[in-house]
Image (cartoon, rainbow, N blue to C red; front, side, top):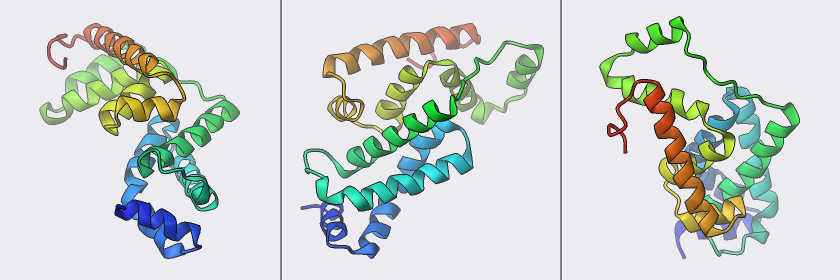
Length: 182
């Protein structure tokens, strides 16, 4: 039994310190996941509180058939997607205006790549951005992503393929050489 599994067991027994330790281990990854979709610090913080409240309340229902982080990200995903639907978030596509081109030109060499990818990711659909986030940023396995999204494994593979193709297309439209990232 690993440390996270022991913490879940202690949480089931009402150990608040165990919840704090689990939070310390997982919070950065969970916050990054939530923030990538709501793009608002206060909303992300509120969703973090709700996520870990749900972890506290539903720890006894954790079956142990996935990693703890996968389970927590599943809770965070459900809460985040509900929030997005409730607030009717609209992810506006960034337009190629003269200001944006000038800003892209001014990006420093060391963060240019990161900034371009960030801008390109924001142009992806929610489902494509989410699948790339879970696989490449949170480094989950395809099986874990399938469990979180409640979709078949082959659907995960298909979404990744199309998300990468769309991201490549967006980057090319931004003037990035297609071989630079893939």
